[in-house]
Structure formats: C-alpha cells, structure tokens
Image (cartoon, rainbow, N blue to C red; front, side, top):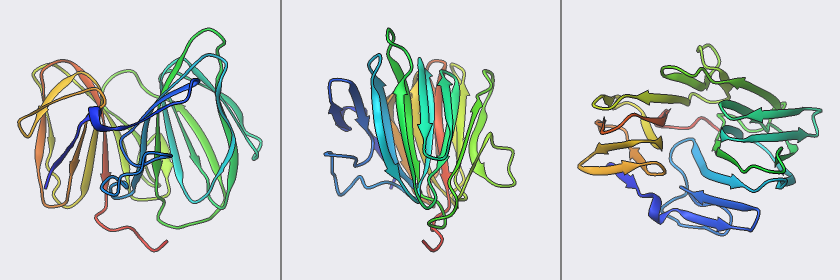
Length: 233
C-alpha cells in the first residue's frame, strides 16, 4: 500500500537554536508506525540559528548524508576532518565502527537549512569515511549510491539517492516494482495518488506498487531507491 507522509504530522523539535521536522521517529518523537522504511531510517528537515549547532556527539554503523539548502555548516570530527559545507553541497559521513563529530552553523548572521538523512549500511562497523561534493545545478543528480555507480558519494549499501529536478507539467515515473522507493519533496507542488504534495511531504512506495509524481510547478524531490531486503547486520 502506497503511503502519503504528510508534513503536518511529522515530528517536531523546537530547541531554541534548532527547528527540526522529522519524517521518521527521532529523539523525543517516537511513532511505532514511523521507524524508517527499508534502509532509510532518519529524514530530518533542520533549520539552525546563527552561531549554533550540534555539539560533538557520536555515531556508529550508519551512513549520514547531509544536503545543505541554505547557508553554511562547519564540520569537525575526531578523524581529523574539518570543512565548510555550503548551500548546494552534499556531505556523506560513514560512521563505521564509530565517529564523533559536530555540525554548526558557520555564520553568526544567517540561518542554515539542511536535510539530514541516516541510511543503514549493509554491514555494521568498518573504517569511518568522510566526503563532500558540490551538487551540479542542472538536471537530475545521483547524490549517493553504492560503489561502482556514478554517484557523487558512495554509500555502504545498495541504496541510491537521486535529486530530481522537474518542470511544470512534467511527470516523474516511480515504476520499479522490484524495489522500495521513498520520495521527499524539497520544493514545488506535485500530485500523486490523488493527493497534493508540497515541500516536506513524502511518498512511501512498497515493492510491487507503481505510481508517478505529476508536477503542477517546477520542483525538486529526493528519490530513495532501496532493495527489498537488507543484508546481514
């Protein structure tokens, strides 16, 4: 059964320095019906006030993909990586056997906005890795995918994450019934399954189902395509 994830019923964290909306269970927002989908475990839409951010904290056995849509983040970790991630760039930190990092708004004047995505790797542990890339400004872009693909960033699973850029009046087919698919609207207005979708809404498509996004405006969306079964963890 295809499920619409309406933005109005997402989890919400308002922490003064952080305004965050959670498509799936995260932090104090716990919904047994929203514990992720396939390899996709977390999809947060974060806004961070100037001069603040996530203090140093740890992760393990998770691929953490960040797509910055406004402003600039400063990343530091215990593997020696220090970098600035600007709007229009994507970052991938594979936590492996364990990594400690911080992500802070690099500006003392402007807010930063980002999508923070956690993807479950095929195997737990391993050596942590870090990479970031500028995202091409035109056309569809394969942001992340497994080794051997032409993705900008390499995941440790068979998941792919594609940035779709659509024009008004176009249609995006979601017609691979042998995979799990999840769509998150980043911008614009589209229709699917008779429902109106706008930025923040999601569309969860199980194996065996097909549908399409029909765009009423220009827009952007993230399309996650995942195997129907995870490998051994």
